[in-house]
Figure 1: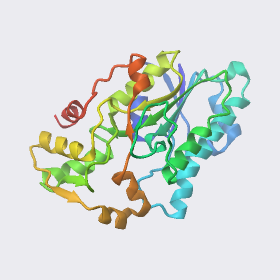
Figure 2: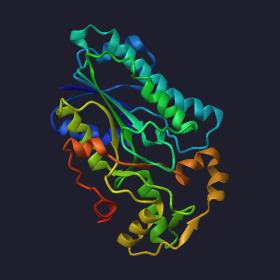
Figure 3: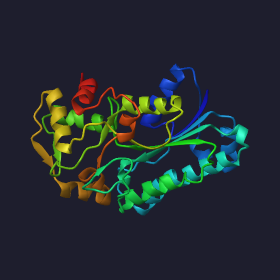
Length: 285
C-alpha cells in the first residue's frame, strides 16, 4: 500500500513510518516545500492509498507574531492544500483514506470531554485547532476521513520525558503550578497502534480522542515519574516563572481539558498502556 505522510520528521511520524515499513508499505514522505504547492501535492498524492497529515510547527514556544503565523500556517494552510490537492484528482486516483492530526487543545477547561463535546476553547490554541479541523471539511465524501485529537505523547524519546527525567534524577523535580491541571496523555505505542487500527478498520471515521483512558493531573504524572526513578518530587515550578519564560504559551502547561477516548473504547480498540503506571513503567524500565 502506498501511504503518504506529512510532518515525517516529527516524533509521531518517525515511529509511525517505522511500523509501516515493517509491514511492507511504501512510504511517500511529503516534503515541507510541496505542502504549499497544490499542483505538486496532487502529483505526489495521485494513486496513493492513504494520506496521513502530521505536519505542524512546534507550539510550545513563546508566541511572537512570527511564531503564531507559523503555527497557523503549518497546520491550517497545509491541511487546506492537501485537501485541495486530493479533491483535484480524478476519483479513481484519490486516496481512500485521509488521516489528520488535531489536538485536545480544542476543548474548553473545567469539563470532561468525549468526542461528542461541543464546548470548545476560545484562546489562541483553541482557535488554531478549530481552524485546523475545519480545513478538512471540504474533503471529498469519496475519501474516508479520520481526525485524531491528540493528547501529550509519552515515550522514551519524547521531549517531555527527555527533559524531565534528568531533572527528577537530580532530585529537583516537581509539579507545575498547583499540579491540579488535567494531564491527557498517551503512550507513543498506543498512538501508532490507533493510527494503524483506523487504516485497517474501514468503519473508523470521524473524530477520535487519542488519549489514554485514565484521567490524571500533572501532580500525579510527576509523582509517578519520581516513583519509578526512586526520587522525590518535592519542588514546584511556579506559574509566574513559566509565564515569564513562555508568555501566553505557558497556558499549555498550566491548564488543560479532561478528555476521554470514548469512541476508541466503544469501537474495540485495546490500549497497551491504559494508565500512567504502565506507561511510565515501559518508558523507565
